[in-house]
Image (cartoon, rainbow, N blue to C red; front, side):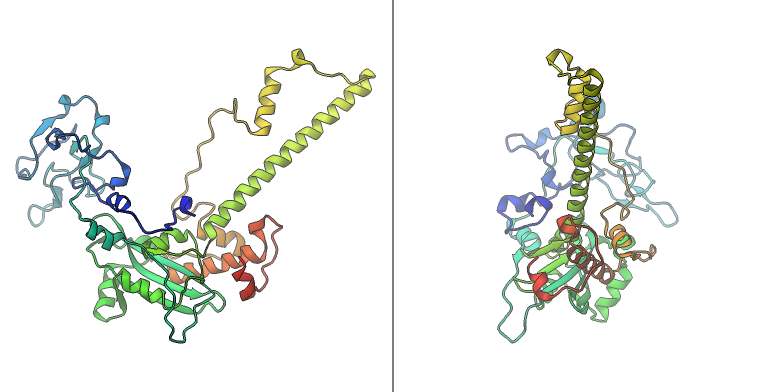
Length: 407
């Protein structure tokens, strides 16, 4: 599961330090290219990138180090950190917004960075701050107050993006697997400033969030949201979701009993492709045997093929058939799909296997209750039709609690 993006243990200090972001461009430090400890920070010169210039009216940030021109740098490939040292705003009312550092007016997201450095420099963030922000916790035992943990639940979360560029939980939905009852369905007010709420996909607007806060219809912060989930979930509860690693990450939650419908769908595809290749190879072998039988009948005896009779084309054909990879040429580029339209998306799988259209309200984004219910029904279909074990697709039948517990 760890190879599929699931966090199975608390993050180490090293893991937490990799969560820092560059103080200039904001990229995650896990991508590498950090300023080496043995390199003088002054050697990490800020350069003016090609085709950009500072407007005469824009003051240079007083914190910026001396700049050098691009032609003094050996290669643009050496410039790994690219950024705007200014800010994107309007100089005066009625005038279009522009970057104060270079004067570009084509938008905060699409404007080409005007400055660059060879190395990324992490922000000065303490381990205590990182631990509070990125610390994971495992599912605790339910308190001995008479409540019974659910046998199985389905979950879906919606996320927005913080000012620092991190994914932040903004809505969480948990439903009971057997009854589809809503155990929890609420907005989560982030504890950090938000750049946007990813409304196109999350379905949550800033207005929705502020209104929910004023009317006390939301949970304040991730930790309280996670505690609310744990009122219904214990260590033995089976949690079902589509790409559930993202939902658990949004909650900073470690849980071992997970059914991920994305991983099941990918496994089915891999098994189907493998079986198809085996069938094609067997068919070619049968055709080859039939050809030799024809030769034997025509020539009166079976003609064996010695080393001198084997051609390069025959070897390459055999290598391709058994999958060794020689002379196979470059693999075809994977098809690009619009977000939410690939073969393994929840939307596509529901249409194919359940005959149901979801996420159809393009203007309002996703509905986490609809997605949680879809993941639950998809898991139900996969298990009860035995698709996950490569059997023939069948009509989904009702499944008992004992059957789910054995998954």
